[in-house]
Amino acid sequence: MIVINNMPDHIHIFIGLNPGQAISDLVRDIKQNSSKFIKKKRMLIGNFAWQEGYGAFSYSHSQIDEVVKNREEHHRKKALKEEYLEFLEKFGIEYDMRYVFD
Image 1: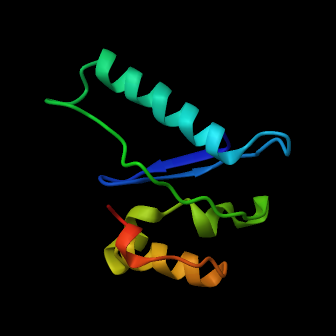
Image 2: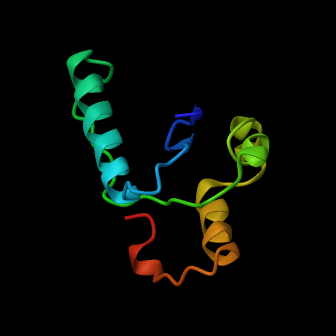
């Protein structure tokens, strides 16, 4: 993990990924381990669970500031959903709005 920036309703993580590792396995591990940690430390009142889906986009190391840092300020101007849809468009990813943000 290179950089992580959390927001109230989502996180941005910049990771150096081993080419032999599947992104889905990495995200599963992050969600499992962080859920266990949050529950063990009783960091929230009530239950905690990640949403089922996730987004993963490829950027170069030189783009860390653009992609991960200063997200709080950035999200004051642009909502998460708006930004996420822009990522999908930018990367040419087909999607069905019925399955975006369950």
